[in-house]
Image (cartoon, rainbow, N blue to C red):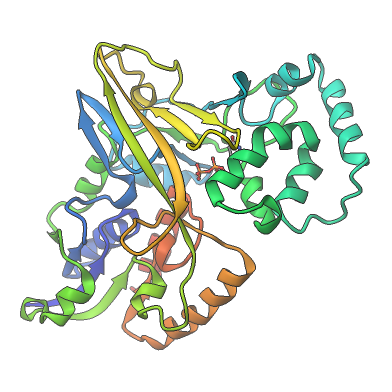
Length: 368
Ligand code: UDP
């Protein structure tokens, strides 16, 4: 069989690309090394609860086009992410807002909070922030940094905050209103029925082969199939057999637990544990993403670690060393005329879901 595209990876990027190219009349084959579609957005029903199997995914975007696009595949609920942070048995609201500051300093007004932060920042004498620690300190001062950022970040990234890029902390809003919405985006929600159903719909009518590893498949003759082009959404360094060296990724391990006859374990979908001594970064209680009323609950503890061969990669570590190495791989990629590279792993970018869709649609437009 002759295909226009071999799409490697049935995650969000691959599925959007396959869907759109199929609509354009292209013949696509999607392969994935896992036994299921949907990559890391995969959700699985457990006791009638959609469990985010590879970590919490909350869809949010300010791009109306992307919101409408994803809306073709599912109805979204009105979930708003408002995580709680636990530090030494004290609870704080996230993101950093008046509720957080009021709890930390027993103050009421934005003016008092701003004064407190200013006082803490002034003594530090930071110029233009050049790493995550300086960026965090210059935004929120020492108390918030020490209690809510330092330990969590060092656990999540496995290195000191001084060795991390500043942009990571800028993902979080800072506001002087009593507003616990973790995102500033115009649109937000969780798809009713889970993310797997979305990807299933995107891939409707498209051939998908699971448990199929790209290199093995190609080396074994690809069932005699031929492909005009390939879209590769796996790790770019792995595609090139790590020939220029390894890019670093972080992975996370989950302890998923069904708690029978526990209706409500922690009262919130996401609870972050920000102190260094607790080995996990957060506990997710999945039913709360969908306002579930089931008699039991499923919770997942999230343990970050360095990626090693055999692990699932989750986050690119976008520091200078890795970004420079990625640029070299990107040059090699330019030389592969019939291969496109997409997604968090193919483009070594800390993409959110909306940005993944945007990038996939752009790639479709560029290859029409
Ligand atoms: N972060 C933090 N404390 C928290 C939550 C987040 O310091 O309680 C920092 C941390 O450095 C993290 C970054 O903010 O890597 C981005 O967090 P986000 O929730 O966006 O990460 P994701 O959900 O993508 O893992």
